[in-house]
Length: 360
Image (cartoon, rainbow, N blue to C red):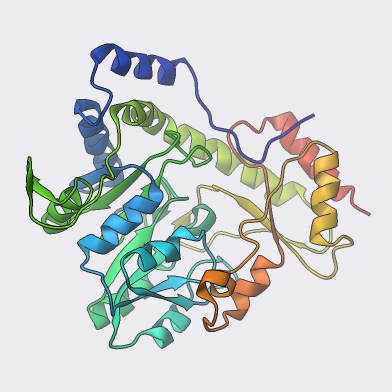
């Protein structure tokens, strides 16, 4: 049996949607992208959604729309994909790393509060692995300091906090549609917002700074999505809730069937729904194998696995000299993701559990 760590769920609907775009002759950004934006905004419960070329450009555009620039600081969690921090650096600003809550692997509000300075302009809260961060606590800090709150929801399409969907929890929400995400367009991104002002600024930023065709009122970029990607995205969005339900079913099965000693299974905080972009185990010293040995053991038996993420942002060479974030660095040394995507069958997930429980 071979079970990949990630696998996009694509079928004839996506194929036919792309073929329709090719037949139309409009393969750059056009009406299909506009329709995708409208549908995604409706799904998240916000008035505006701006499609971008990928998740990193979504973050960069959101930060620029928020006015982040040289001399500013943006607080980000120390445990995330590199783009969470690099998008800040792309603005000429400085990412400041906050440690994380060990229970959820999302930003720790207490450490976040301690990192706020007069230079702080914004906070990026990452909904890591598919679980929203502590929105109430983060928003309270942002509101008290007049800080812009940007959601990094690249791994949390459809997740909720107090029954509100991600993308509708901060000033702006940033999504990725990379091939391994809960919904995929190959490459692609989206920024959601309830603000007319941010929407207008975002649309200029992603389109060469144009306020109207050939009238450039600010520095912008070509961060546009194409109708080819948007066509796939519209089909994937219609299937997203089904994808997430299967991820939740697989995660629930793991919760009750992985019994090997020395493993900490992920948990869901009250008031939040988790969409399980990743199902990440934590190895303790009581587990009989080191992480590299465990990875080899699983791969030899056809089970894909990966470390998300092996180096905390606070210890990345590019950010040498950053303050230590002990919890993030501890998780980086101990987490291991196993397959949880919709393509994992009942038979496959049973095999995953039997294999893990068979470690001696």
